[in-house]
Length: 50
View 1 (cartoon, rainbow, N blue to C red):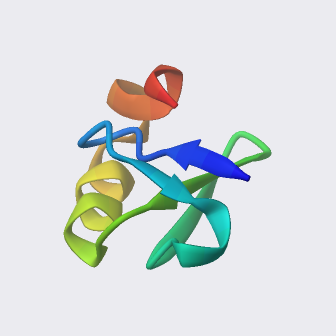
View 2 (view 1 turned 30 degrees about the vertical axis):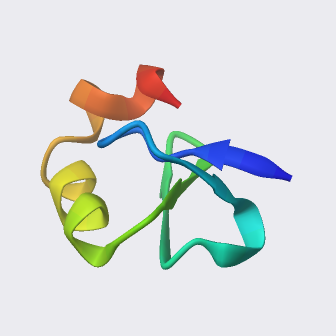
């Protein structure tokens, strides 16, 4: 299944995600650790982008 990294907007395969994070009960998938760190610092800025 394809998912969208909410930070950079890259579309990736869910199984290929480098990292994940959960916010308000939803799991978000990331193409890199850098995107995950950015999301985790301010999830409310990105949660609606995925």
